[in-house]
Amino acid sequence: MARSVRSHTTGVRSMSTGAGRVAVIALGLVLIAAGCTAQGDGSPAASEGVPVIQVLGSPDAVALHIAHEEGLYEGVDVNVTRVGYGSQNNLFLAGDLSVTQGMAPWEVAQFVGEGEDFRFFSTAGGLNMWNGVVVRAEDASTYETVEDLVGQKLGIPGFGTGTWAAFAVMANSRYGIEDAETAYEIVTADAGALLALLESGEIEGALLFGSQMQTGFAHTDRFTPIFSFTQEWQAAEDQPMLISGLSARTSWLEENPDVARAIVAGVDRAVEWMAEHPEELVGEGKYADWFDAQGVLGDEATASAVLDLIESGDYYVSSDVYSDAWIDSQYEFISSGLGALVEVVPEKDEVFYRLDE
Image 1 (cartoon, rainbow, N blue to C red):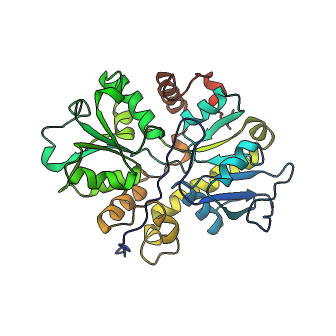
Image 2: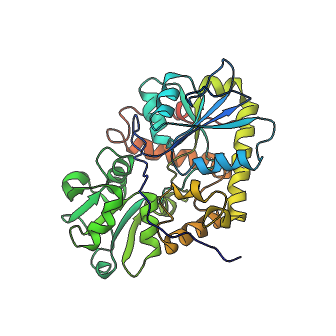
């Protein structure tokens, strides 16, 4: 079936994923399981013992929303309530919510190190970390790796983002660049402006969030990707790098394992559903507005590239990724990020939880 891709420019709603308390510039969702109702102001009315899924305003929200809309959850009743930008974080940290979609494993580790009782428990609906670095296509032979860019102007979306912190860690561990902040001439800018700065020659490379990185992948006549977190980690560890997944309070997981499994299964079905119905994410598709919030429908080539990844299962991933080998590889990354991603490295079983144990 031919895709009808709605091509227009939208305001970039990027997620600044940081190691610590996160400021999310996107529309949040709260998914309320087992019949919890919403208050008149749009915030969820939490009830004791009611399992609640909190979804940050990241691309992961699409899978959980579709699972609800398509009736893909079995054995658990899920309703959807939209909340304001900061409400979802505050509610979760305050203890009113039990489950969240939107934290990377290293963010969970950071919270655990600060005394929170969180655990990462599934990769279902997790977003592959396509974030990375691009250069101008005409300079591809000059800058073949991030090491070649040392000493040059590198545009980044801010030092407070998890993308920058993760890059600094991986640049050190994979390329021996001990201090990325001083190794490059750093230029900070809004994520949506970085590609324009690159094309105008004001910077030589751009560290991008996932949506802008897809533009780099799609427009090979203008850009050449030289680094992608998930590709780099896949080559080194034979495991994907994810920027999000399902996390919850340990007490909730211990008290509600069947509900947690039902949530995972429903989100898995939604990931499969999107792969089978990509036309519903673009053009006049019924979920185009939700997908548009990712900032990937600005042009047809970028949207098409993302849909290809969704169809192949390389954009949103399933719970099958959540293996002992994947957990070990993520814990290795967390450990290598001491002082950058995390201030304390908790024990592995304090960060990750297996529902099948």
